[in-house]
Image (cartoon, rainbow, N blue to C red; front, side, top):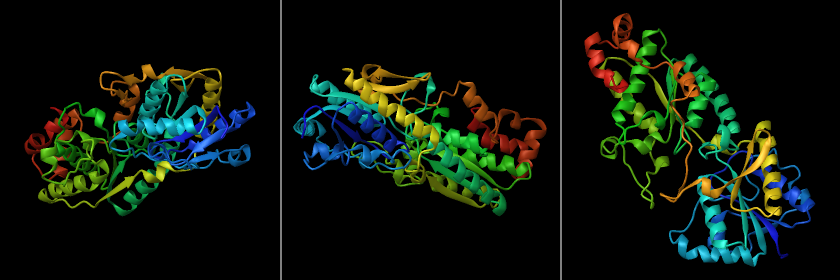
Length: 414
């Protein structure tokens, strides 16, 4: 293989627009006289030292892939338990293939890996990162979204709108859980754009240990409030990251909880919607109220969708910018789009060196953007605990106003 080639690697889960970055980067690099190799299968194959994973890319290979979902190079989020010991293998495999420049495509985990490679390479390999995640939790300047987020939001809203019509037609509730381990951007955006009844995100719960019962009671009280308005249907959007905040001892009373080898909750193993559905149904039944509740997960449908034009254009910019940055001698940065221009953000600004982890962008609940989302939700508010509002909701709950307030006021912090 030729020396000083450009390698392109994808890490983490899929996100709409990956192929757009691959396409634009490959075309620009070849037009600049460089050879390009796609690295198949993500970092897992590099850690194992596989030699047959370097796929030569041509303009013909990539000229029409920018509008398709998935990744022609595939991806992986696995890394071995003994990653530090195998890291030398990863580095020697890259250098053995003649990779002088590396473009990484991924979220916070891939960004961490890109920083690690760049630091250990000591100038022998230059590295640039492009921000991919439907969670939108990588801190980009100006609040600009990570690529893939807008497409995931678009497709998610389409799905929620259809489910909302089913809820209205059938007279039932849906608890929809969507992706977002660390941040609630996707759940909040979907709920806001689709006009869901309410959305719940981890950022609105500042407590270190979140009561499972409290979350269930927020949902229960929203159902009762809707019932007092003469509506027997609704949709609640739940960010999966809520599960990470639960008090484990309390949650274990309702659900088997496992942790992965890093000590993190296996969020995919916690059926958040189902567990909340069962608890809410139990509460409503005790009140003599029967409500049909369906739990549903939305995630995989979003992350491999064909990108909308926004993400196609965005990723073409990022792929071009990544190659231009590398060939001008740059390294150790993430390429971002800001006010119409492409600029690098150094890794040092993105890593929290106290924890050794990438900084996470969460939903800022103090902003007007969050306030708008919150104002258009239908859920129990402080004004519902007084006067006629309280009387109407308590009546719908088959409770006295005093009993209703005593039962649900705590969920508001009242």
